[in-house]
Length: 257
Image (tube, rainbow, N blue to C red; front, side):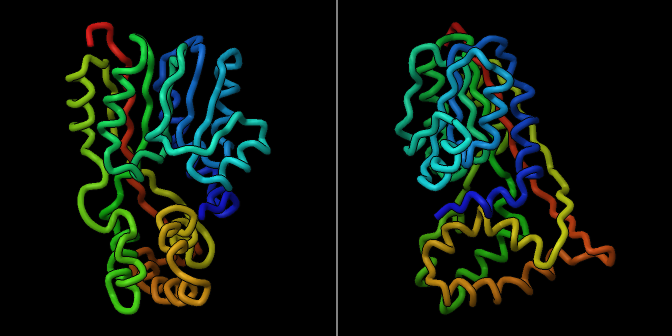
């Protein structure tokens, strides 16, 4: 279960990729904007500010996140992003840190290209850090007893999660889009005890938490803490630096697709 308050604990740092992504979208006066994977709506609010004349719709699979977004006045809906279809007049589709949860998201991107009108924009950001020490520690621990059985089907343990930046560029160029793709590694400055654990608790560890009862969850955390603390040691000044690679894709639908 997604917890909006846990997710928002690092709102400023989690939000930075959103603004870097949105800055590359060149739409001036879009009629309709979709935020797919809107979370608690704190970033969707900035879409409303940038394009005040647009109709902004928001989707998220978490009822808790959608409830938090609605408290902010966002027109948010509970739904699987795979079921979303652009309504007439949709000129911008933005999805920030969501499509990594969908194994077939490349097919989804290509479907949106086919469904959107020429000139529409698609902007996507996905994490590219699934081989980072933080995630490797989680998968390693999840493969040990007694965790291997309850956590056998958690996402991201095996296989390729996202494409390379070059592959996204190739796929979208081949269907007639103008494409801007890049990657950035943010060095997040964290503070507090077990800072990296607290960060991933709001994201990567969500499916782990969902599969364990309260006692199991506390035991799993206790076993994970020394692995993360070794990988990300706290500096003498109390800060922990946490590298986080992200992949950005901005595409404008062409007229010759």
